[in-house]
Length: 165
Image 1 (cartoon, rainbow, N blue to C red):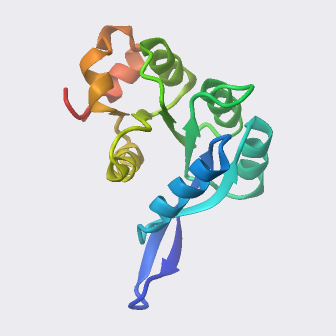
Image 2 (image 1 turned 60 degrees about the vertical axis):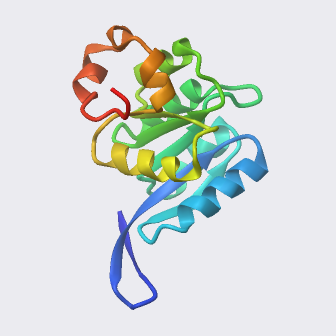
């Protein structure tokens, strides 16, 4: 976390975020949405693993919001790579896919949450805040269809507050 002054010159602790998506308009749109929050700052964007690794090596990142399906890579691969470098980095996967296998792989790779891209915009901020609190976030639609028993024991312990469960 870092600090910045808001419009009233009050110091606000900020969470530094990396957005990883291979579609520039999605990266930029998500970054704009997140940057509307006084305490959240997207300071890096990446379109692939190499760019994501470069970003986390260049500056301290608190949370990475990672697309599950990149052009030639997956969010699982990105998660494994950046978590190997920085194990305490929080990863939130966002995706168009509600495939339970992807959800399972994401959590096994070390993600703390999985949000669907077709959710309401404010849900991304809710998901970010939830995983920053050390909880797991799973989109309501996924929570209803995803069998909890398939999650690893570690992830089940973190299943403190999942919307819809």
